[in-house]
Image (tube, rainbow, N blue to C red; front, side):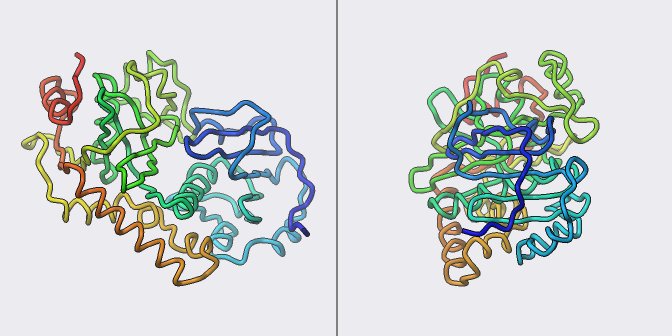
Length: 339
């Protein structure tokens, strides 16, 4: 088979473990900041389900005119060439070439593409191919294996809720992504480093964990194993879905939420295709076939509806830094709180 990609000078390569799948990330750099996003690696040699090759244009003299003639004929490739990767991630123009389950990207500071774009797209592709639901959600698990999924808008307190729950009795499942099989209710967490901010909620964790700065200035990266004393798990059966909506100075607690409202909210704030703007990528994955594309969306809609109806749904306006409020919330979620 003829390849569109020139011979690549690979100087670093790691296989990262995303629970149900593994991804090889290779680069022409000796050191690559993109590895900081991941919490688990697989010892080489190892098989990978997907591969990403990140080639820095400042490290090796690639012919950009030749690359431009070989890029994917997709909307995402056009956006990469304009320096727009996904969501709020921008950078220098980059050249995207895809061959099956292998992605090649040529540009600068390509750590901005790995977790912000490639991981999200790969998880969505994997979900589409394996009958799973890809959600933007955090998760914690009680002693009996029951999982609570946390979703919410930016600034709603999801990360604080997760960190405080896992510091006081819960086990860590995931902080960003979840692959869920709705017919069984099993949620599979995606291992990742936890991004924390140096505020009142995390100051002690940062000091105790000896954390490293995040790629974006002012934040830190934490291996969950370093900062959560009760450890982590790979899966749990969903019992609760919590929409975090912390509003300081207002009445707090867990408020029951009917499934219809929960489903509408999750469709907008947790469904990966909607939340991350991946509809064009899914269409590409479906080879431009409208029936295949809509079949995936219909299946995900049915799965989301089934998931919320077999769980107990809450809106959470909880100050998790208040010990009594935290203990009450965790008790209602079935977590044996530890002071």
